[in-house]
Length: 82
Image (cartoon, rainbow, N blue to C red; front, side):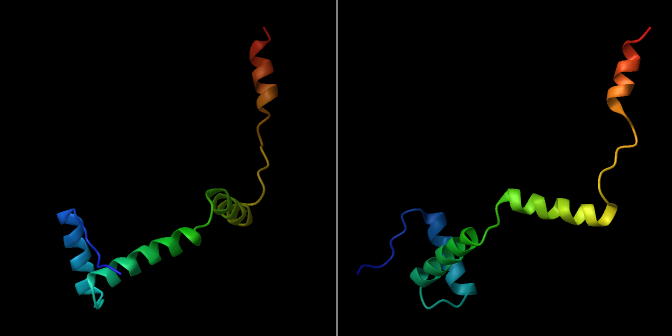
């Protein structure tokens, strides 16, 4: 097994900084942890449709069902009458 070789200097510096602040035993371990954390984050990410549905449900509880007081169709039809 070979060590981690990063060609991009800025990425290498970020990996070294992460290894230092996370007290990882090596740059390779710091990168492994970072990649694993990202994979976990994506795996646990809730789809947008579900997040919006939860927000809508909580708003419905807070303000009640949408009961329009204004009859838009009637209003538009009256605008065409002379």
